[in-house]
Amino acid sequence: MKRFSQRRAVHIARVLLISVVFGLFCAGTAWSQRIHIDITQPSFQQISIAIPDFKFLSAQSPQLARQMAQTLGQSLEYSGVFRPMDPRGFLEDPQSMGMTAGEIRFHDWRRLGADYLVRSSYEVRGEELRLEARLFDVLSGRMVVGRVYEGESRNWQAMVHRLADEILYAITGERGVFDTKLAYVQVKGNAKEIFICDFDGGNPQQVTSNGSLNLSPSWHPNGSELAFVSYKEGAAKIYSVNVFTGSERLLSGHKGLNIAPAWRPGTSQLAATLSISGSPDIYLLSPADGSYQKLVHSWAINVSPSWSPDGKRLAYVSNETGSPQIYVLDVSTGEKRRITFSGRYNTSPAWSPKGDWIAFSGSKDGRHNIFIVRPDGSDLRQLTHGEGNNESPTWSPDGRMIAFSSTRQGDSSIWVLLTNGTGLRRLTGEGVQEMPHWSPRFRSN
Image (cartoon, rainbow, N blue to C red; front, top):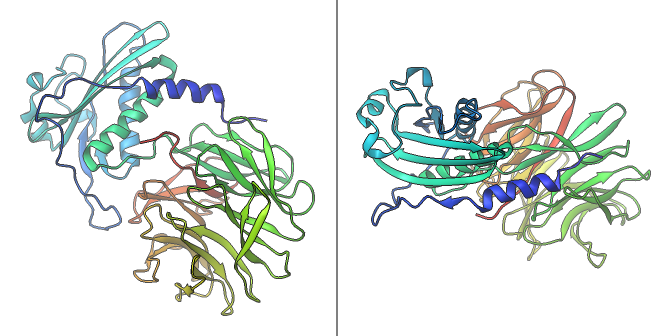
């Protein structure tokens, strides 16, 4: 079985832990003018950022100069906030231009239309890499943030992703998703297995390998394990798997259906659909002691639970009014309300990490598309528009992006777009992939 390498996680942790503040902040230079950004607005304008090739200070690994600059640009562009400039229009040789504010000709960069400039240098000694980076505000000509990263040279991508996160945080006050992963279902012959990949679709790794049907992966809030549904013993049961060790445990094996697991934020409880009392209802499970309690029950089919970030409300799907629609339950009071009324088939709700939106898949004109709506049912917006079937939305932990499965290019694969409906890109390659679920961040902020 292939799994997320614990050794690799240790290497990445080393890179991140010994990243230090680059001691260039003088009194009064700390950046306080962060920009409020709401990319859900169609009128949002991306920030122009110039990223020349990194400056190499040793003869070893000069090819990293271009690779690291490209990786940083791609990561920042992926965030939806930045528009990296084409380096072919730059006026200086990146290997000879300066690194400090006094050495940079900011008027040239302003003339090119840059809002921000990244200057970075690196040195490779044997297996070790030292990376130094500075972000400058082109208009004011002052440094916004400076950082030094040290670690094994083979982990340079982790350093660059950390730098991208630092840049995003310096400008917006919010972290990115550069250390996150997506879990999804991959078709393997007659089986369906659980896989995970990096935030940008890279580094795919197989998590389950039992030759059965494995569905509905759901990340635990601590990011170390996945709940999933498996038919490996015949009936549908809910298991969890540790993505670092591969160890599995049974979470729910009641008679009848055990499907659609969703971990409750900040806890080791999960909501799931069980049919132990006849009709499929939603229960709150406590695997530690095996207890459970009914949350949603009626004569109808109740499935697809999704928690609000505070764990106090639950979005779910019910056909109690005749067709599948999205409802919201207040867990403490038991009060529920229907929030979708447009369309006759709305499924797969996913609550945004800030609690301000619920994404879902709705049928319109014979196709499934991705929509978002406020938790009170207002401000309905359509993000995809009939290119294949688009299903199973899941939010990035910063709330800026939604990943989903789509058949727009044939077989189902995982795609991502910004929450204003722009920035569409495909994450997974050949084969059939479905049911994505975005992980929490793997490090504290």
